[in-house]
Image 1: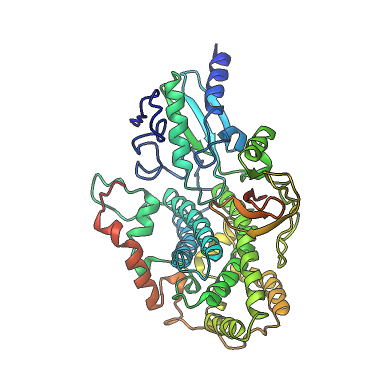
Image 2 (image 1 turned 45 degrees about the horizontal axis):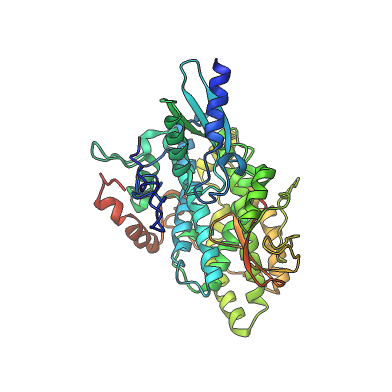
Length: 311
Length: 168
């Protein structure tokens, strides 16, 4: 039971009278809670728990890394409205990541990094903060460094168009937790995509400079686009078992939406080819660009310095 | 006996307010989904997040546990209900009134759809009235506001800025 104390109720001289005087009632600074508390996390029949967990890590890592990149705009965006918009989008993705990493841990505890006895760090945080680069399964589109605002708009457009199509299908997953996370995520990704689509159009039809920047951003990110539709063995298995989505099957729907934005913006689809992997290995295999290492270093440093940390 | 206990637990839980919108109870906001009491007197409350990244879930849980314990229910559990996803349609009429009274424009009906989610490249249009003066001569400021659930508007009649709870 938290020790919640208030000022004396008859203290009328103090404008703060009646407010709580200690912080124990706040979520921040007290303790952790399980984002799946009381949720039935039984793995559906015929599904390999380890494979389901890895599949959840893929979708969770996409959101976590993308969230971290977008959050770098917090206090740096071109104006206050966009600063708040980007922070909101980053927060939604962080929430999706948290649920997906928690679902991964509930499916297969063996994939959760071990910490010293007595560590209060919950499973989803262990997965976020105590895995190394090669254990991250995100697509590389999420991890490359930020450029200018136009590049970020382009990245959010590409990412959310793809992820929204994926989540619409995932909301019919046989795994009840994945289906619920996806159904909720669809609502959020809808306005992420609208935000990015509107800005893409605005920048494309804006000044010569805004258009030049937008096209440069699209050119830079385009080599990472094809990877989103390359089916990894884990995704193929998850799709076959009725719990996941084969991204190759999303191409037509995603292209239709993206072409709508490109056409409205008077922008041609770039024609250069995809970025290769090392010996065919890509983000889903744990093969990343150098940028992910620096991103994780910054994101993980505090948690790793205090594996028994109580916040 | 059990019915009376359940009624009492429900009454206490339904009076707990939202940590970010304290003019609303969790019940009015539609995030308190269920209250049960089992034969051993264990109270279980089910809450659902408004958004995936809602940072207030732990505060809601702590508030429910604290209030129910203070009301004489020693064993209280809070579970997360992820499905169905929260919608602003669950905000009660009393909740809408409380929002408006606090100067926050309540949401209209949430979008319903069948089939793929349509892309909207034009700004979102809503029939919004200024909660302060009642004028419908308002302009949208930003689709994103201080919390995930609100957009910013400005009233052209009374010139006051105000927040609108977005339909979701």
